[in-house]
Amino acid sequence: MQFKDVIGQQAVKERLRVSVRENRVAHTQLFLGPEGSGALPLAIAFAQYLNCQNKKDGDSCGTCPSCVKYQKFAHPDLHFIFPTATNEKIKKYPQSELFQEEWLNFIRKNRGYITQSSWYQNLGIGNKQGTIYARDANEIVKLIGFKPYEALFKVVIIFQAERLHVAASNKLLKSFEEPPDNTLIILVADRYELVIPTVRSRAQLIKVPKLKETAIRDTLLDQFSEKLTDEKAGEFAVLSQGSWNLALELMEQSDEREYNFMKFREWMRLCFSGKDYVALFGIIQELSRLGRERQKRFLKYGLQVMHNSLMINGKQGVPIVARNSEKDYLLKFAPFVNTANQKRMYELLNEAIYHVERNAHPGILFADLSFKMTELMMAGKKAVVQ
Ligand SMILES: [Zn+2]
Image 1 (cartoon, protein in one colour):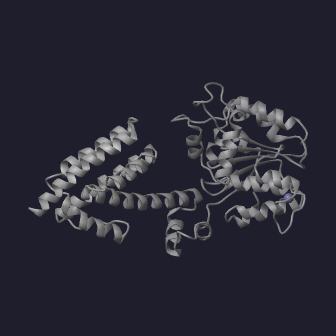
Image 2 (image 1 turned 60 degrees about the vertical axis):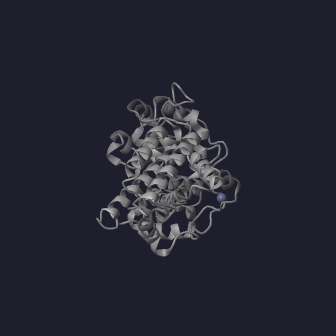
Image 3 (image 1 turned 90 degrees about the vertical axis):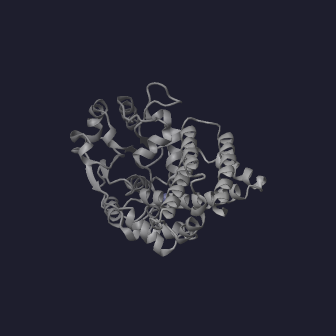
């Protein structure tokens, strides 16, 4: 990763460049930045810059032998330590070394923009908290005991330094204080007060501020030009509160809401006509493949449509929804949700959520639900005609 791949943070980048230029690179540094500010990608870009054999224009070249390996996050002198816990694969004595492949794939996929919770979710550790163990500390001591394999600097990046176990930090204090020559240890953290004081006092603090709205907006427009308007990008930038991860999450949610709306409308239209079984089966199959969490959110969206329809029918006004297309749809749909079917529809959607949570076969579940919804829509239609 080059500096240019790291969003915003011009001042921090400049400070890091100057430290290299003036040969004042502290051996142990603490990159402290709130979630989504990019402290981890900055640490990686800095390490790449430090080792680049052909720096130019204030950035690493991206093409020298060192950069080529760094671009893949796979340089023999670049090491990552991070919190882990037991999961399906590692049932005892977890440590970073055992999860290297998962880690590298994860940071590659996200270009270094990861959060603690997204990492835990990726690891599949359930509700457990990850820890950096004494075993990890032994590994670090061993790693930095060797000379760099081929790089100028051997770099160890410790993600989520807050999660260093006391036993681990005790083993590392000496290494933090006086690492061997040509070694750089970068601790990455988002909560200063949770980093053990004896650890943080041994590291040079590099503060990484929240991202500026303009940086987030411009990057969103840059990366998603085909589906974002200036206005929408600006809106996400404001709501993201300086976190690139939150900005992406908001965008995904907005995409998903659009999908849910379109799909629900199509689904109900097919149930309503009760004729086109080929198309209906197409939808059933598509919904079956969504994955449990998305299926639940789709069904909850359906419940919301039911609720809004009742509000409209009860003359309680048209609910505030994201877009006019949704409002138009609700006004047309609402009359067909009536005393002939409303209660049962609510129940069916709620039951479906319950069964999705309990691992029901999705194909059978959505087929059954579709047939019942077809009957109910027919009943609703009849009630309107009468
Ligand atoms: Zn290079």
